[in-house]
Length: 218
Image (cartoon, rainbow, N blue to C red; front, side, top):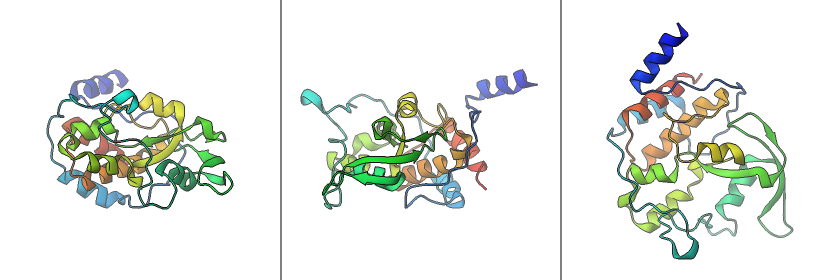
């Protein structure tokens, strides 16, 4: 029976939800739609094949194209860049540099693994909808200013364990979901909300994976 299920999934091009720890974590960025709204938004996304990655350059080093601008700008002008704001939002017991915004310590319950991370140096900020996926699904036609704002949109930014973020890379939900199955629903809600907010497209397999994740919502 297991072999049959795996064969069906492979033939359908749809990845199953990962099997792993099930640590219910409900934290999502402000502005994330609830499950019912996310389902409605997902159904309304335009389905089409992803565009080419031609022209996509994330790096800003040595005169590189830097198509989403330099990372972690201070969008609201309050003196704190977006990385610092996400760390302060997602970690508990936060300490900062005296008189500055930079977070020096705190504790993260990593939503992607369920692990507790106590070293800020091991924490990265993930774009839930990867920037490469934004590019493929509509952002390649935007202005640089709009792309820079999207790259720093707090609704799409989550503090996570660095090594898990590296493993995810630029993969979409049909290719990768958080190993912690207890975060499948929140992850899908964030992902769909961002795609809807920016009128980005989706693919058949991505939508199927997001449908399955949203079905796990209480």
